[in-house]
Amino acid sequence: MEIIRNKEFGGERPLFASHDLQLENVTFHAGESALKCCTDIVARDCRFEGKYPFWHVKGFEVDHCVFTPGARAALWYSSGLRMTDTQVDAPKMFREMDGVDLERVNIPDAQETLWHCRNVRLRDVDVRNADYLFMHSENIDIDRYRQEGNYSFQYCRNVVIRNAEIHSKDAFWNTENVTVEDSSLSGEYLAWHSRGLRLVRCRISGTQPLCYCEDLVLEDCTFDADADLAFEDSSLHATVLSGMTSIKNPRSGSINVKSVGELILDENILAPADCKITVAE
Image (cartoon, rainbow, N blue to C red; front, side, top):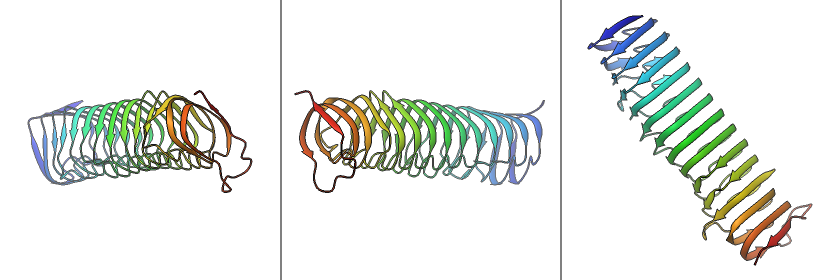
C-alpha cells in the first residue's frame, strides 16, 4: 500500500482513481472530488476542506479526521466505510451508501444526512441540527446515540436503536420493522403511520404520539404528562408503567396502563373499535 504523509492538495480530483492508498496527516484544501472513484483508501489525521472528497469509493477507513463545512456532501455513492473518532462539520453527509460504520463520530450539522443508505451501524454518535436525518434508509443498528433534529427516520425499514436520546418532531413516520430499547423519545407526533414499531422500556414525551400505527407494541414504557391524545386509530398491544394524560380512539388490541386522565372513545373511533383497556388504579 502506498503511503502519503504530511502533504497538501487542492484543486479538482488530485488523487482521482487511486487504489491501495494510505493518507497520514494530509490536508485537502478547497476543490472538488479529491478521492473520487477510488478503492481501498485509509485516511488518518487528515483534514478535508473541499467538496465531494469521497464519491464512488469502495472500501475505505477514516480515522481521527476533520471534515470542515466546505467539505459538503463528502461521502456519496460509496460502500464499505469505517469511520472512527472523527469530527464532521460538513452538511449533507452519507448519501446512497451501502455499509456505513461510524464510531465516536460527532456531526453538529446533520441536516439531510444519511439518505438512502443501507447496512448502517452507529456507536457513540452525536448528531445535531439533524432535520430529515435517515430518509429512506434500511438495515440500521444504533447504540449509544444522541440526536437533536426533526423529521428523522422517515420511511426507514429494519431499524434497531438502543440507549438513545432522540429529540425529534415527526420521528419514525411511515417506518417498517423498527425496535427502540432503553431510550428517550421526545417530540410531537411520534411515529405516525408506522408499521411494526416496537418500543421497549422507553420514555415518551410530546403531544399526540403513536397515532395511525399498525402492529404497534409497547413493553414497560412510560409517558410524560405532555404526551396526550395517544394511540388514535392504532392497532397495538401496550404495557405502560406510568399514568397517561389521555388516550384517544385506539382501534384494536390491548392497553395496560397505570392510570388515564382522560379516555376518549367517541363517534370518530374506527372499526373494529375493540381495543381492551385495563387501568391498574
